[in-house]
Image (cartoon, rainbow, N blue to C red; front, side, top):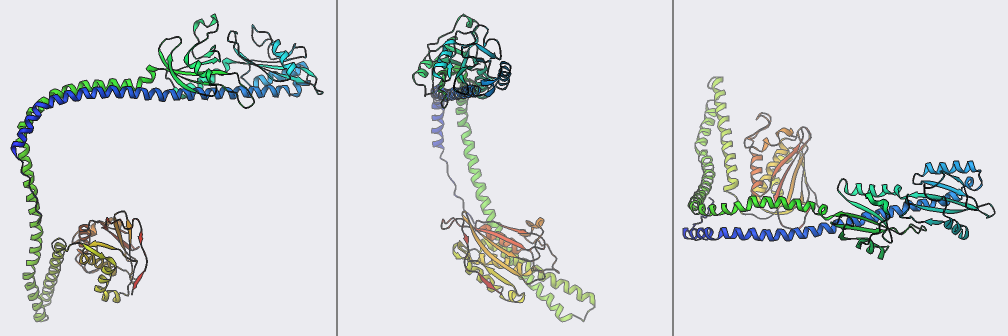
Length: 592
């Protein structure tokens, strides 16, 4: 019988707590409100700083990525001008052939707005258009002279004051004997580079507002995302911190907070510089990506308004509700004490009822044996004394009575054994399962020899348990394997493996097997899958095994298919950390 201790609650202690709650709970609620507000403001400033840091690094990475892409695209144009200068048609062809070849390159490389070829005096003799721009001269004479004198490729930087802002490339053309024959020149409009900025912006920010600028090292605006209406008045030169920071170190990218040069609101600006690519020196530009603080703070601000609104709607009414609750606590205190006492009384009565039920099952099965033994004895005496002296019906009726009394006696004995799993158990102690299995096989020795069975087993571990009950588990499982072996002699194997904090034991046979749909039914008391004429027994053996295993903190189940044998698994709880996830293997014992 299980005894439950009860706890006595002293009324004076609850009265004191009730007065404490009534006086201090409202004050504590108000204090918590102010503390929560202060913590919220600190968390807001901390989150805003984190967002600025995160978004600033992202803007810097975007600027660096665009700068690298611009360098790569312009480097490819740098390689193109060398390819054009070495083209045989451009060097030796007629004016028509040269113009056709330039038109071909113009269609092939869409970045260009104009391609042209001059003679040794600088006169344009072939070009894709008449002029590279409506207002500019076809060829920069200073650049032409520099190429003729040096023999190197000349890079013409962008002029912020030009109508169409573009960069130029110029390379010398030499004849077969090294004679200077002129130059090939190309123009790349800055407008054609805007797609690099727009693509990076859409990829990073989608529809969110952002801004970008492309500046010279001196701060002159080459291009920007939103061109102002007054841009025709002349180039704008920006004196902003991000430009100065980028100009101070060409190889360093980063971000800082500053004021927008037109709108006047605060922004976070990521900056990076073009640095050239391989042998291409580059044009020494500055790339800026910027986003306003209001856009960066937007996620936190939305959260702040949401939490603030919820706080005003919840915390302030909660203060008044707390005062009401503190008043009700005193009235509900007595009900809580009574409910707790009733619950303890119910638990104690449930424990006594459970113990009485087990005792009743034991006493009922034990006391029923005596009158049943008398009925069985006298029916057997009638069968022995009057068999053949009465008619055939009488002999059949007496046989039914004898069989019924015998089966009833077996059922009561099995029920008594089932109840003794809990009432007649022994305390757990270290139990070698190998010795337990040997004991069970000794009890079944005659049945093993009669069925010519072969029983093998791996080395089995030592667990904490009731040796007698564990032997009964093995004996019942082996007995079933011997009984349901089919046409061939039984072949049985017992093994064990460690899994986390338990040992898994298995008893595998090659018998008739079990339909999987009955895998749970066979562990129910007095449930049978075959008639008594096919296989004897009462159907309680597996129920006893399951109850013993559950007493040891484990579980039991079967894996089987009809005609393919069965494997019965059961676990024994063993939290000892000796060996984890290791299989108990070693010697194998055969019993025939």
